Length: 202
Length: 217
Image 1 (spheres, rainbow over the protein chains, first blue to last red):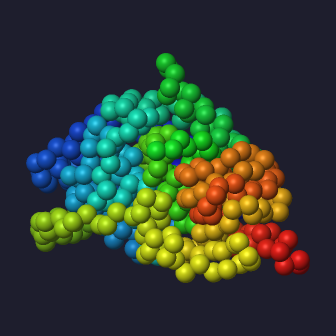
Image 2 (image 1 turned 90 degrees about the horizontal axis):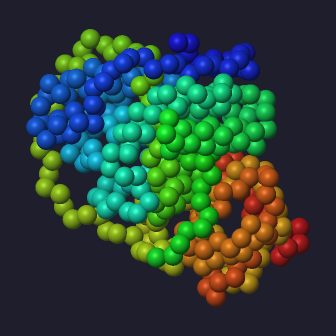
């Protein structure tokens, strides 16, 4: 896969989303919960071997410097170890949980200020009406693999630029040479399409 | 508990989840998410999307010593100290994420007067854009205006009406240049909102719009 072009000379070339790499069936959520319960380091090593290199790849893309990226990956892994006890596989999914944690770690470092988050430590909330049902998360996560492949290229492109390059709407608009409103419209269409996919029977 | 009628735009939620919002805008999003289960559910789905995107990346090799360093670090881990009391809960009209930015209840903040009936407090957000608390007296209105970029407003106390509808506690106005509005505070108490813009100059123009009818420039 190509690194995102920083100089902007491939402005309108649509970079396709990478396809799912593996047919890995590991249930990372159960594994993470088991690690928290037993303190088994072998499980931690398994998580490290899978997620460590992905986190490094992700953080480099967001703009973390080469010289500090391994340190941030290490900090993320330690945070995973320490906070695993707060991970509830009924209410969270390991990939999303680890993604969010790494996102915050990278942004906190790049901006020298904590990225504002909505679930604060020490304020564990009870599930409320309207929130995702236990188990439903994992079903959505599973459907996501297929759903992403169904996005038209121009919608996949804005998802790509948001998640892999951390670009704001205005930056995407400038880089693609389209109005801000069109960027938002594409993201809305992509969100609606994905939601439709996992709420439907596909 | 009041019902939230105005929610975050999907495009804003996705930007938040992908970490591409400025801290100023992300603060308003996090505050709304802390009180809105509907939007929280959508944010959760977009974090699942983040997890899938992470999974699709080409892994980058870590140095040979990375695992050993990590295991050494685990050896030095102290068992977590017995948890002290949970941090003090914020007042009911301060969403938890905002509590990290202000150290006092809303009424005790150092409000700066902008014009009669209008006051604000700056919040220390890094990066481009800005976020502020705005306090507008009952019956006061802002000039009709559009926006030059994205602007997020969350109502913390009181309410206002504009061309879009009525906005009360917990509601979010997620506006861009496609919308023209003229908010009028219709609550008996002052309306306090948390506002963020995503460009450095935009707030100046917002404050300018507010004081324009009063100062005449």
